[in-house]
Image (cartoon, rainbow, N blue to C red; front, side, top):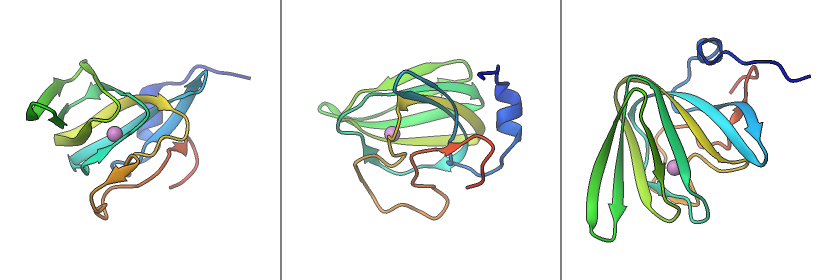
Length: 132
Ligand code: NI
């Protein structure tokens, strides 16, 4: 049976950074939450857009677009969609929490990526309540 999910409780249930937890699904999309701080990795999703909502803190997303490189800054409460095929690298200057909406099975490091540093979990998401 489906039950309401507290995002505060979901976020309190784990501590790993850049390791999203799947809190629910909408049709064939996952709703994932993640704790983030510092740099992620340059990557690209060839076939899907990626939706971000900043729940707490601040998220910067560097983008490599045809016109050049730029960074969008998302304060708490902001949303942004990275278009499919656009290389991007999230960065959080302070400990932050984000919600991501993307098709089930989407890798956090995309279809192509730079070398994944140890602090970044290359994953398609972990069900809430199970360990990394
Ligand atoms: Ni991405």
